[in-house]
Length: 265
Image (cartoon, rainbow, N blue to C red; front, side, top):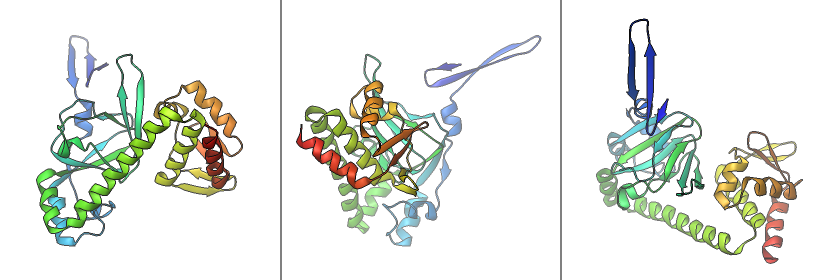
């Protein structure tokens, strides 16, 4: 039985009934040490000198999260760490008082998230949920700041990442205010293709990231039903099969269609 952040386990024997409450998130997210190889696997650290990476690894910890478990809830107090997604995918979402969910981003492996933990008020800006088995690395704030003095390029790289996110947020707000829903869908697909990649198949390019109608609808501010209808309009350039498997038959035609529709707005 689920109760907020916890799960209640009830065991019944012939003469005894016991009730225990476990925070299963905590059990599945027991911290582990981080290796140098794991840090170097992340784009942010791949070009750093080995001694610096070794020092950063000694001030990091890794947690594992099973699919559909919550990493943290919106408003939770966060540890003063840089959060990096080493593997898997996370859904960052916010829920309105009405109960309607807005999906802010679907994070692929290699992404940084929960920036307020080190650059803000220390509160989780949204709820992070693992869409599949995922591992998160948390690097202590003081170690990160010390590394900036040794490698200023690392700080500039981090600023570049946050600047890109801010620009994407501006584009997203502009799109919600002034673009047709089908144009927002095209731009969302183009962004997903660029950041998660595709695999070549006979029918075209199949997106590596599986995206359901619900996830896409909540990301671009439309209803589930409208999302299904818009995908039908994009056919045969784009097809969405069961399980969120999206195939683009011709990426250039998709881009041209987005520009054409955008000019009509």
